[in-house]
Amino acid sequence: MNKYLKVLIKPSEVFKQEKEKASIKKALLIYLIVDFIVGVIYTIGISFNPQINFALRLIGAFLPVPPQLIKTALIVFYLVIFPILSIILVSIFALIGFIIAKILKGQGSYRVFLYFGALYYVPLGIIVAILSQIPNISQYVPYIVGLCAVYPFTIAIKEAFNLSSKKAIHVWLIPCIIIGGFVSTRLIKDWRITQFNKKINQDYDLLEEAMKSDDINLCKKISDNLAKEECIAVIDKDTTKCPSQIGRKNDCFRRIGIKTNDFSTCSLITDSWFKSICYREIAINTNNVELCKSMYNDYDKNECISKIAIRTNNLALCSSLSSTSSYSGGTSSFPRDNCYKELAKINSEVDLCLLIDDSLWRVACVEVIAKNLKDSSLCNKLSNEATTGIKFERDSCLRDMK
Image 1 (cartoon, rainbow, N blue to C red):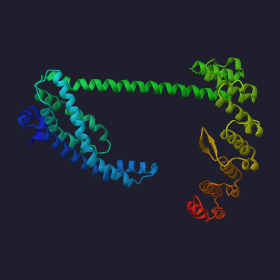
Image 2: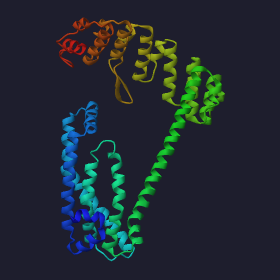
Image 3: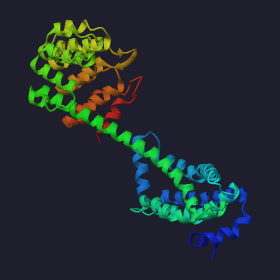
Image 4: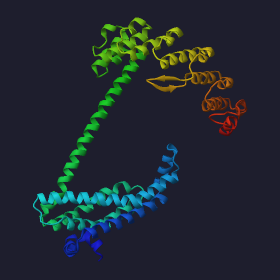
C-alpha cells in the first residue's frame, strides 16, 4: 500500500519506517507539490463550480473589475501564492509544536516533525481540495477532515518527539485552547457590542416613533434613562426636563426647538452644529429664507434654501443657490443642480432639467421624466454637442430608454 495512504490507517508504522529519511528539504518539497496539485484542483473548480461562478458575477456587478480578471487573479493565487503561503504557515505551526514538545521534555527534532506532517498532508490536502468542489457539503469538509487528521497528527507528535500519547495530545491541545480562548473572547466581545448596538437602535426607534405620535407611553418603554428623559421632555415641550448629560441635553433642546419653532430654545444649545440644525429646521418649517441666509456655513445655508424651494416649488429660489457647497472643508453637494432636478421631477418638466450644469445629472434627470411619462422623444431636448461630461447626451438618453 502506498505510504501516503497507509499513513492515515497505520501512521505509527509509516513514521517509524520514514524517520531516518526525514529532512526539511524533502518535507518542503512535498508540501510544495501537494499545494500545487491542490491549487490545480481549485483552479478547475473555478471554471466548473456554479456557486463560484455566481459569486464572481456578483462581485463583478459591484466592482469596476471584469469577472474574468477576478478569475485570473484567483488562478494566480491558487497556483503561485497559495503554495508559498502554505509552506510559510506550516513551517511556523511546526515550530510552535516543536517548542511545546520540548517544554514537555520531548527528545525529537523539528526536521522529523515537519517531515511527518508532510506525509499525512499528502492525502488529506488532496481529499479536502476534491471534496470542497462538491456543492452543499464543501462547508463541512474542513471540520470532517480536521477530525480525521487528529489521529495521525497525534501519532506524528508521539513518534517525532518520543512522547507519551497523553503528552502528544497536549502538544496540539494547548495551542487549540489558547486560540479557542482568544476566539471565544473576541466572539463574546462582538456579541456584547452587537447586543448593545441593538439596544441603542431599539431605543432610537422608540424615541423617533414617540416623537412622531406624541405618545409618552412609548417613551416609558425606552431602556436608556437619558433617552427616556429626552423623549418625555420633548413630548411635554419642557426644556427643564431635558437630561443633564450635555450631548443629550443639546439634542433635547434641538428637538424641542424644532417641534415648537422656537428660536429661543435653539439659543440654549451649546454645540454649534446642533444649534445650526435647530435654526435650519425652523427656517424650513416656517419657509423663512432670510433665516436660511444667516446659517454659519454654505452647506447649511444652501440645504435650507433648497428644501424651501422644493417644498414651495419656487424656481427663483433654486436659481439663487450656489453651484456647489462645502461642509467641513470639502465639496459635499451640488445644491442648485439638485434643486432643479427635484423641481423637474415634481413638475415632470424636462426644460427644468436643461438648467442643470452637470452633464451626468442633466441626462439622468431627463431620463427619469422620459421613463415616467414613457416618452423617449423627450431625450431629443438634449444636445449631442456637450464639451464636458457625456459628449453625446441625446444618444445616451435614447440608448438608455430602449
